Amino acid sequence: MVRAIIKKIIKLINLYIRFLFIYIHNYVYIYSKGLIGKTIFGRPCLILFTQGAKTGLERKNVLAYLKESNSLCIVASNGGREKNPGWYHNLKFNPQCEIQIGKKKFSGKAIQIHNEEYSEWWKKMDHMNDGGYTSYQKRTERIIPLILIKIT
Image (cartoon, rainbow, N blue to C red):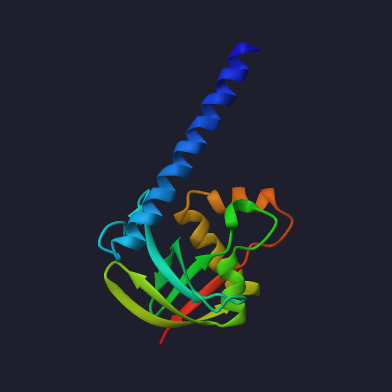
């Protein structure tokens, strides 16, 4: 009984440390203007700049991505929560966005992926994230959206 409780506490502490590390990473990547933080846990990261659907203000989010030719795929997992992340709603409202990878900035247009293309990208993204997205999908009833950003 005591060992089970200790294991749960250690698991919670590890999750908290990971969350804190990701939060600090995102802060550093954004405020170093892309100089520090191009990857996290071996995965490439971008900074997504969107216009707030409700406020019109610029919003910044750090996301893992996968690039193929002139397209970048991002996942609106929101950690498996029941609601899509705010940036997803911002892109639905206005699909024009900016992407920053390291110090380089690009303009892009976001589209949501469906059907066979969704299945292909899901496998690639989930593989890159060591099965993390499948784990998130199990936590929610919504289908986690995949967004493809075409560099313009």
